[in-house]
Length: 355
Image 1 (cartoon, one colour):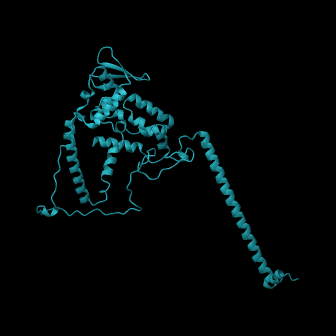
Image 2 (cartoon, rainbow, N blue to C red):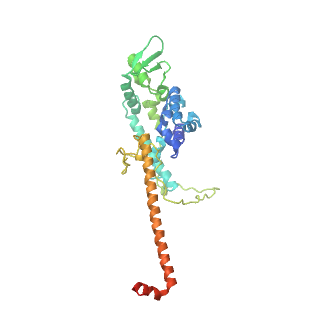
Image 3 (tube, rainbow, N blue to C red):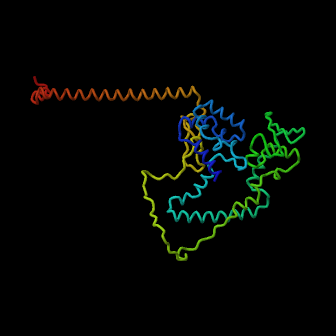
């Protein structure tokens, strides 16, 4: 629950309603601030946010960093999630049951959890490896990056790694720490630690935290939920001194109930979406001309000037049309007044051309 709380907090603190502040944070890399695994990277990313929008940086720092910044998470948790993906997966998992009555909702929950515990335990029991598939996939990806690093070692427990850009990262094998912060944060050796293991001819599998072992995976789903017989076969029960609890008053809200979650301003559309915006400037999908990233300041000024000229033209045409209507109304009024002054006989004679 603590991990879910962290993921939910970062969602609340970053996924605000669309506003200027949200747009500023999204444009200068809001996620870099949250995903930074060490203090130095966090300060650097926060400085970039502050350059774009001081107000946005202040809103980020208004909450304790332990709730939303990866570098400030408790290392013993071995979790680095900074999004609410887990809660969104659960929300999608129960989408068909959310609107059902409470008893049917709980009954469907029981069935889903009963089946999931059984299937996941069987999957873990059949595993032929000592670590979970997620950990193995993560190590494989980091091993590819580790081959690009150079390892230097003098004497002692500290190792120095250099990337192609010359950036130095120190690794302590005995303490299981790395300056990048990812090893101690996740419990999985990062690419710098794996580079040192390759240098010492060691296996990275031997340095994975116990949380990612087959034994821990089986213990996670070791619980069991038994099936429940039909209600007609339940034992007799006579309640005593139990108050009659009435259901809550139902208040029907205006409009259609919302089913889908609110997507972030910079979040891409769903892959199965049937509609996508197309920009009229760059002719690319996913945005319109107002939010086109390839549009420079000069183009933006031209767009604003063009919109202003179109607006003035529409106002001018509207005023001209209104002026003609006023002139026509005045002419009709003068004709009517002239008819009243001359009378019907005089007007008929004038129309016939008589003197």
